[in-house]
Length: 191
Image 1 (cartoon, rainbow, N blue to C red):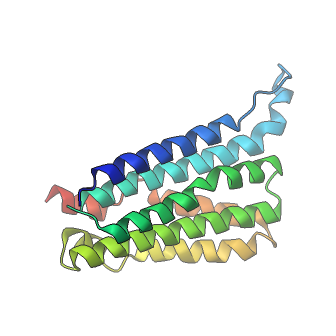
Image 2 (image 1 turned 120 degrees about the vertical axis):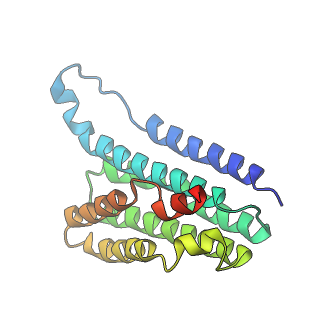
């Protein structure tokens, strides 16, 4: 089956996710710079989440660009990914409003971990459907970067109860790893 509807639906959901996140940013009633200070955690949470959603959108686009068709399992795997991504605004808001309290940083990590797991399931499903020798299968290979991301989230979640700042630094590290679209897929697409 064609992948066009899947791409359009995913783009729409991701746009809504970003819209929900930005609507959670409220302007201060105080016109001084001091009025902005309490909003800094919320704004920083938003920036981090915006980067993560952007990373997923970019890599989702490249992932689907590398395949020719999809099947029913792909549809469900994609919905699974979108479900976890749809929780990002809630986790972002909770974390920002509570100034990076340990439980909120851990919950944010759980959402990131599960979104990462869902993206991995989607990738593996597409590789299984198209074959290990397909351009996507060759591009992703053993997926060391994906495995490192999942392991990093798994370490950061319990660490949030010891030192939330270290967990946040791990989340930022993972985001930095993925800021550019996956060059493995871009390389295969270009060939």
